[in-house]
Image (cartoon, rainbow, N blue to C red; front, side, top):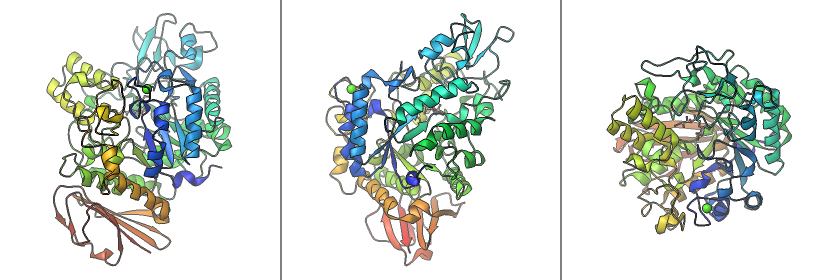
Length: 558
Ligand code: TEU
Ligand code: CA
């Protein structure tokens, strides 16, 4: 039976290639991470999640794995991994690895075999279909542009890849595939890791017959996620995985589930613990989708607080008492939180970053901090196409601007600036010195030009920095049961400027009030009079009727 330590934890996500380089090749690595464990301990986090560090051709920055049981050489070797894990545990830090088993790399030995013929041991490890009228078997599009099918002449068949052609989807209906995945999991769990983040795990059960997907007006392909997400055998697969592997270890799991609804997640993350412990849901990070459905996420419209509140409140309320929630503002696929949900205007950036931190960290669920969020790192504000490296960004530009001419170049560049994954992948900003202290070599990817003003070195010497505010948030979660276990009730749901919610647990009460605007607003919170002001992002006392720009106030009483 999994312990509930995942409910008391704060998890820090490291994007290894951008975190800390130790050998001047411009790419972050495992030895580099080791040099930063004291920093992470000082922040107060309990668990570290590493994005994939397995051998990979890196077509999708490691999410295309060619050998699950070896380390990507550029990050180090298995000894470096063992040393890092031991050092993490000595620091009282747990480790989550990233389990990417909806698909492998096309350079994985299983796929190399599978594509050669229809009658070898691995022929049925992937999803192969005959052409239909000489074309792809259905209308599914890839998340990264183009069709979700690629033709293999050796088999005279197409194979499915919901992502890039270099990421063929595994056939989870094949018990041999599931057993191979369980062997991979046991390999890492037996080394002593503390759990997994599971990549797009709600896509592994494909719909019978692989039917066409809804095709938005003007779109060249159907939206595969609409027919694939939360497939009919998903619960069965997750329960089998739990029975065969997870239940045998004291570990935690978080499943990435694009498109899942709270009603699905009640099972996936049930408090019974017979599937996973929690999920990453996508509702609050999909609010600014383009009205032109074919363009999906590519948009530059701001997120409205009302939409944000309704999304987050739904997940807090619907799961309360039934399932466990993850809490996150950003990750390696999302733009930087302070730029997206508040402001990165230097006048308010620090207050806004703290406000977002408090708003999220006092909710019910396990909070995730993405590298750099704890110092208020911002979007990269890249303006030229040449500054981007993510295949999702480059493919979208090529598809919508160069090939289909459905978006003007200037608009697409706006969309990329606003919401590309590249925003989250600029190197961690440690110092104001060369390359922000990330590398003594040439950084693999452009730095955010504001690193001289936003870096760990300055944050650690400034008591009012975002870092020390996050340190307090994390400490308060560790101290107060109402933060960890309290119920959740939102107030003033129609307030378009201020987010207010309360938590209650065995006589302890918490109230969080956050102004999401750059205006000073008047609100009457005298109902909290007498409660203790636990934390705020403005130094002065407490005027119970005023909220300054991006001010957050957290009241406590017991
Ligand atoms: O992301 C899954 C996913 O849904 C992403 O495509 C996300 O919706 C999109 O990138 C938002 O812009 C996971 C990994 O987190 C991502 O880095 C990988 O590229 C993807 O799966 C394929 O493994
Ligand atoms: Ca390196």
